[in-house]
Image (tube, rainbow, N blue to C red):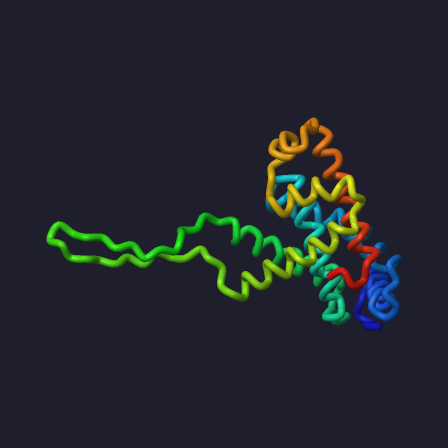
Length: 200
């Protein structure tokens, strides 16, 4: 172990080694429990939406666990983890910026001359499309591990991107129940991420 790491850093490194060497779900769970709340508050400060902050926290932990073998104990695990999380937040915010639609528009002037205007494209390149498909595939795998009563809610929220009001109308369920059950489903998602080594 690195001599430069603090006691906290040494503790994290021991958990990481257990997670990687034996796939110990308790090690993943301990790491998640240590950093879930700090990550959530970081995201909440950036996006100002509690539900979105929870979603980003789940996704960031998933990314971090997938890349855990890349962590080097030259610096604290918390530094590495928050770098992964911040990059995820930046990617999310960048993708949500307003973009124009790709189109080649032909304008005809008064003199009959044709002018072609190339507008910037918002269509993802092949690499981004592939990454998006992989992410959906991973999310579907996780969702299938949820209790049946939560699956439909999660699919409507994350795959079809329904709002809470739309889910409430679609399922004829009180809005409060929708929010409560989605909250419980997120808790299950956290547990699945922590307990399943090969999910990501």
